[in-house]
Image 1: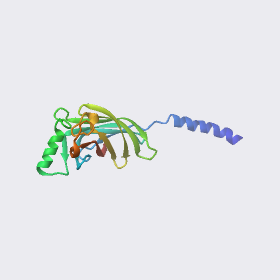
Image 2: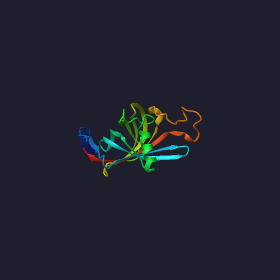
Image 3: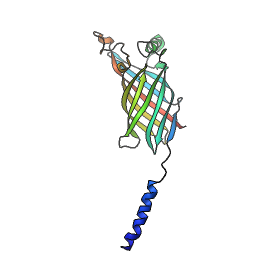
Length: 198
């Protein structure tokens, strides 16, 4: 009984201490644009193309070891094709930058801003909801992201439907009888971020 009487105030003190213990401040990580990569891949009936696009700026917010938010801005004028060479490479890059696709003259940047994050129950893995803005159109998207805070890296595979952003060229969803000229609506972006403390 005496032990119980003695232990009760100690337990209360421990709980009180935990309740008022300072939370770890949020840590902001800046995206190292020189070391980070965005790899894109798009498919058509007769094959596929892939390439890169540069990140202009970005950051991630981490609080108590958990991803909380962030954004990154993409330089759409930097889009390149890596599976072609010579004139074919230049022609496709020019076409992707035209109004048929990303219209980079009027829309030189794209933006992805995280709106909510939920843990998947595995350390460093998250279900992310974000707003993607491409060619002046904004669409809510969802994807799985992985954050390794110790290594300073974050990765994700994001699938987008280009028609959500009014990019309809060669889309079988809007044009009939395209045959083998059909370009699929979905394309993927593989995100590989290198992070440094801001």
